[in-house]
Image (cartoon, rainbow, N blue to C red; front, side, top):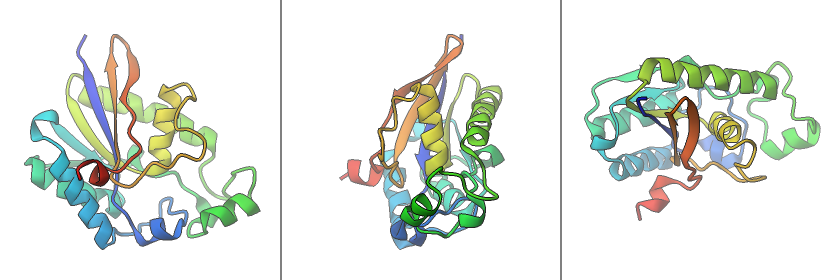
Length: 195
């Protein structure tokens, strides 16, 4: 059976990341630090490790993907809507701790539920396998979505409680012998690892 490798790279920093605001599907751009993080991630990565790049349509992910693609000399970034961040509906823009205080059940009015995110994550894994089977694809997406992938494939072992998936961090998952597994779970930023 062909081995399929998927990199899970989180986009670079935005101003809302600094404030710990829920971004969801609000299109918040990279800030200066985020651009530098994307450049550092690109410098860390090897072009020989990746065949394709796929990105969420949100600009913070797409711009990160474009920076990485340029360095790796991959001519095209595929836009994959299933790589979108979890929608937080009416609470997008709210500070995370205020959301947790006001909505202790974790439900975001008008947003995507945990169950819906879980179901979309399964669809994403199936779609990546269908499109990229037997290749190595680097995906650029978002914290909540990456958390969901890691949580599902580790059967709830990771991420650890309150563990943050840092901007420009990279974890790798692999599909072979009819199942997915986590090859490496690295919540720290590649910018930190490349120092």
